[in-house]
Length: 349
Ligand SMILES: Cc1cc2nc3c(=O)[nH]c(=O)nc-3n(C[C@H](O)[C@H](O)[C@H](O)COP(=O)(O)OP(=O)(O)OC[C@H]3O[C@@H](n4cnc5c(N)ncnc54)[C@H](O)[C@@H]3O)c2cc1C
View (spheres, rainbow, N blue to C red):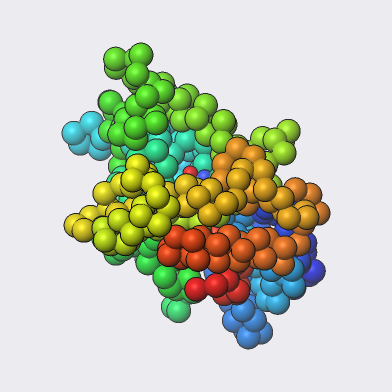
């Protein structure tokens, strides 16, 4: 059922922004198709919403139809060779799916424990954490092609995944994700990320369950799991992606920061990934910085938070201030990770 003037802020983790002119919760694939047809027939713009944990709603809201993609269901199908195909409809809560794979002793998603949102959004920015990303195990994405309204299946290569990036992010109006299929294997978990390895140092043979528990504990310390009593809870997680730059640029950033020990990670031939949180702190923004009703999380320099009753404009102003300071001080331009619903970020480029 299509409803009018529906507030969107409560449907997002940041809890900012205005209403949708029209809104529908689509519980199955046919309802998604019907909603798209309805909007197209009226010439209305369409926005797709999942769990609202990586989206910022403009103060003006969205002047079209917002479709919340919410079909449910998950299946586990054993394959030859001992692997298991795990299929989830787009509306499955992501962390419930991860918890079930871990409970079944399957490896492949354990480091992605505790990430909010729905399964259907995970291919959009190639969700990743603690040395793992969905692209590693995602076998197929079932999509609705918005041009033809036909259902198609895309394999991993067709999704063109990159760091926090995919074809879906680059072509935001092309597809609605209806479901995802991962191929997981029983066995040893991934312990590649130094912070995770350190947390598990006393465990010679950690299980996937041990890794999930360690990841959840590390995330909780950084306010990166959603908890109703956490004052940092109104966020979109990391607000900026970690910049990937040429090695020579990284050297120059370290020189400007007078920090030869600057955190830097290999990111392909001649390329280096920098820590956006470190850059933000170097530019003078400490955890807990406040600007009216918005601020930087007290637990993580990379998370911008709504401290209660914030406007999106205030959030944009703080993000702009941070981008300008990091650029002026260190010569790197940070890019936002969340999507501004139906609009282009009004941020310094
Ligand atoms: C506390 C916190 C911690 C986080 N930690 C991480 C982390 O460690 N790693 C990480 O990668 N992300 C992290 N995130 C970001 C976010 O949780 C993920 O990106 C998540 O996958 C977003 O899912 P969602 O359902 O909330 O998507 P939404 O926020 O609703 O949507 C995000 C984008 O995907 C599009 N979209 C959503 N569903 C569909 C669909 N079915 N079809 C087509 N397009 C769709 C939307 O249009 C929008 O552009 C974190 C967020 C928070 C609040």
